[in-house]
Image (cartoon, rainbow, N blue to C red):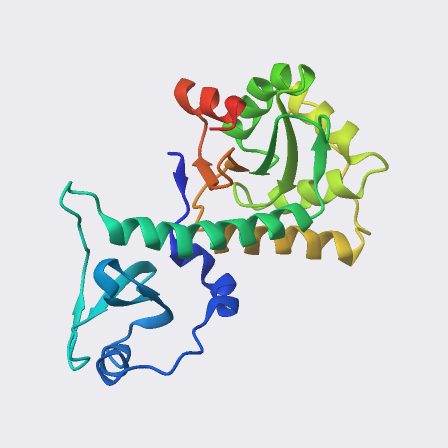
Length: 251
C-alpha cells in the first residue's frame, strides 16, 4: 500500500527539529508521560500549541489561556477541517520524509534509467524475491521511455543465501549488467558466488537492510519515491495497477 511514511520509521531525522523554547509547566508534565516534544506553534485565535510524538505518531497539544492546563487532541474548524492533522503533516511528516529521501539517495545502488527521468525511484530488492522480479519487468518500459529511473538497493531477506547472491551481484565487474541478466532471465542466470567478497560489499548490504528496517518495510520489494508535492511515498510489495500508475505519474 502506498502511503506517506509514519513518523516511527523516521525518528532519527527529528533530532534537528527538537524544540529549544522553554516548556510551560503543563507541557513539562505531559512530556513526563512519554510524549516527545518537538516544537511550539500558534493555532487559530492565538492559541499556543505544541507539536510532539507519541509511540511513533504525531500529536498536538493546546495550552488554555491561563497556561495552567493543556488539551491533547485534534483541533477542527467550522467546516470540519482537521487543522491539527495539517500541521502535523507539514511540520513533522513531510520534513522527516524528505530527510529520509536524502539518505536513500546517498546509498549506492544499481541505477537504471536517466537522471532526468520524471520520477526517481528507490527500490529494496532481494535476488530471490519473485515480486521484485515482477516489478523489475513492470518498470522496464517506463525506464526506457524516461518516465522513471530506478536505484536498486540489494538486501538479503528471502533465503539464507540471498545475501551471498546480493554480494555476488555487487562485487561483479558490472553490477548493473549482472543484475539485468538475473532479472531478465527470471532468476535463471545467477552470478557466480565469490568466496573473497570485499568486506565493503557486505557492509553495503547491511546498510541497505538497516535503511529498510528504519523505514518500517517488512518485505520486498519496498519502493520509495518523492512525489510532485515532495512527499515521500512508499509501496511495499508488488504495486497494483493504480499504484503503478501513480508511481509513473509521480503522484
